[in-house]
Image (cartoon, rainbow, N blue to C red; front, side):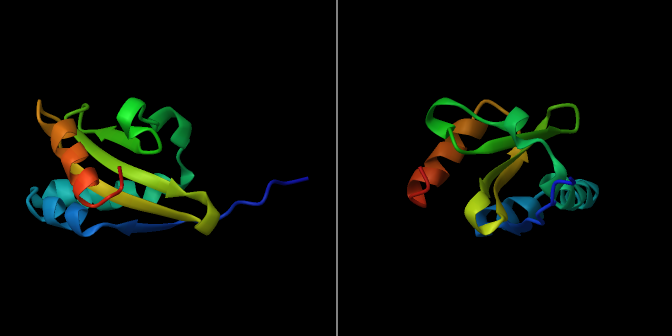
Amino acid sequence: MKKKMVNYDVEVSPEFQVHLRKLQKNLQERIKKILGQLPSRNWKKDALTGDLQGFYSHHFEKNRYRIIYRVEDHIFKILAIYVGKRNDNFYKTLKEYLKRTKQL
């Protein structure tokens, strides 16, 4: 018996859009392609821990950039929350955003 594949819609948050526009065009196109591939990924390997449990992180461009997303299985939706270059302030800024938007 074949397992039925469920299609997930991928949406992006306003904050994600703001940060996406700040990146170079070639990175923007790469990110759009990655977003289209998220529904077929093995999310468990992208799971974050600690304060960020329930969120996932996709690394790309040799781990220099991150896409942070949340999977909402009950409505078959992936919400891309945050994107940016991985630096010393990345997760601090992410947590501040999540607290400000009451997602954390």
